[in-house]
Amino acid sequence: MSANAAANKLNSSARPAGMEGNEQRRKVASVLVALGPERAAKLLKGMPPELVEDLAQETASIETLSPSEVKSVLTDFAQELVARRLMAEGGLPYTIDLLTRTLGAERAAELADRLDPERNRRFGYLADAAPELAAMVLAAEPSSLIALALAHLEPSQAAKILRALPGDKQADVAVRLAGLEHVHADVVGELDDDFRTRLVPLLNQPISAFEGVDLLVEVLHSSSQATEKAVLDRIRERDKELADKVRDALFTFSDVKRLDDRGVQEVLKVVDTRDLAVALKEAEDDVAERIFRNLSERARENLQDEIEFLRGIRKRDIIEAQKRIIEVIRSLESSGTLQIERESGDDE
Figure: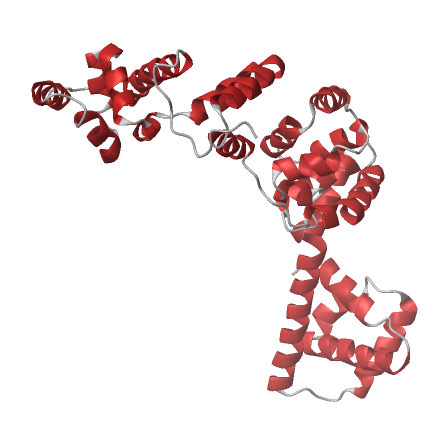
């Protein structure tokens, strides 16, 4: 240990007043005696004269220290000195101080949050919430404040929340994000505290999750063909992509089993045999059974042989073949050639 470090430690330890001060000075004096006159003299040179005088009186009152006492005194002092150096020169506080002096307070605070993720992360409660929920809660806040909060999250987390914001808000927040430059750390801290107080209770509320498309499909399955068509047409006027998504979900290849035998036979008259073989390559057993039982024995054997000899068929090819067969089924339904079984046929 350096003489300056030891002197500073002894200096601070010997300064307290009162009974505690007397005990501390006695302890420091014991260290000086244990070190011997030559080393003790080097340490005393770095102390104020009045403190040297006080310590001299204490050392004079100590006649002898046994070898075990010398070892104990010096061991305790060395441990305290090492602990003091670690606290003063290492760890996160030292790092933050170094970063602040080098990069400024704001950048230092950002890096400190990354160095110690558990250290009261800025806006961490937004990152921990589901992006859709965080976006819903943030949507009522000014765009400038949302942008500032997102700027303190990991880019991937911020992107998910930004994507979930309403269209107009999303664009405005994006512009604000792009324009961010320098914001005082105190302002960031105040916003974080405000959001934490107001928004965390909302983020912790239980939310019921609904799959909107699945729910609509379930409703339309219980409606008539006319109702289904009217609803899809209205959706398509506003959102073609959503209408296509609902339409695809309304009838999948697995729903072939919803057709009666006459309907399956009508489909088999017009579908391409190659498409049928590819579509059945990974079809559910009950779907394959429904199709096979509506074929003649010879046609069934030929189809089974073609399926058996198919090699190197990609999943994408199977999906595309199934889609083409679904289009045939929908076309036949629209023309009135077949009917898809529904839970209810009324318009109510």
